[in-house]
Length: 263
Image 1: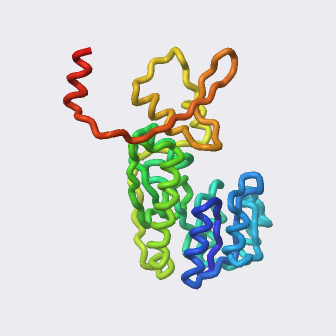
Image 2: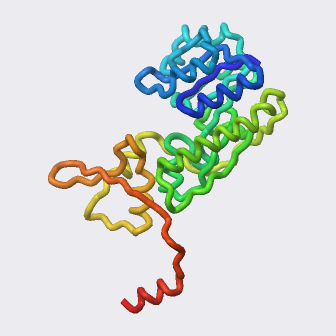
Image 3: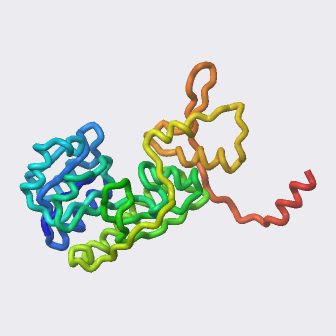
């Protein structure tokens, strides 16, 4: 098969490797602009120094669409790609465009599902689905649930989702390329978030009442090395907060309750 990859980061790199291991050709590569690109050189090298490399921020430009059409690709594969793919781009692929998304759809549509699975307390996981005119609403090929542990942060959950995404793609690609994969319409409901939605939770208001669970979930969901995350304002300055979590020894819940009553 001739494939055009829309991708970024570690998952895209491993998807490229999986595609090439089956003998399929990556005839075009669409990446993030340089400032937002991660592992770009490694992805290009893994593609076999593919000649046609395009900027994902310019997919609406006629010249870019013409370049993609000229490649006569059979299928498009999107892996952790940050730009929305729309028609008429989607119509250029006879076998459609599929997406590797780090959420258990219909939960976690849109941006930052690793954060919102913790905040919203919804199931986490990964899904491979066909892209339609909506955002993460297309027919599902396969998905796998990923457990959220009490010690998980936004970062550790993200790493789990990365690994699960690669495993699921490697499992499903042989079926996809042979036209033997599932195609199951999504159910309604679920959750959806935009990038800007993080602004509504990042600022901790010191005079607001939070439950213990709410504040712990907020802090752990927004703990990710290299990102600012949650903060409060004191003396007209933002103070950023991160959290460290680890398991302790098992406890006897009945004795804990008795201790609380004694106090």
